[in-house]
Image (tube, rainbow, N blue to C red; front, side, top):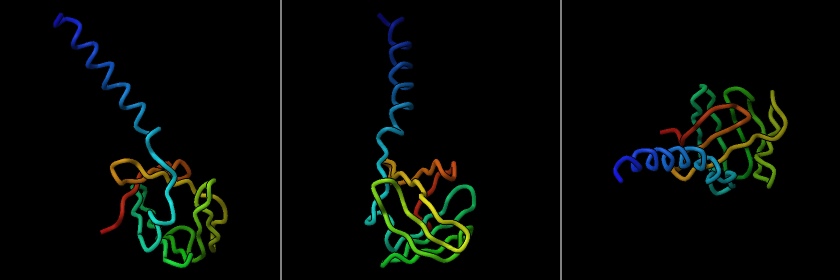
Length: 104
């Protein structure tokens, strides 16, 4: 019986790794408004209340959460930015290929 525990444990661990991204949800207005996100690629995004936005890459602009993603209109970027909030409270962006967390 012990011979089967290791493969079963490995299978469970691997399945959790692949299921974790599926548990993430699109970031909402409540997740972002008044917050600053520090991304692990060096980008810092600030989502001011009322829709004002600042990014170290995109510059000043506006933002709003939509069902398709975070819509940003800034000096150097206009478009949708995906920001998924993971169960542990951190973020992941496929647009940036980066992870992020609230800045301290």
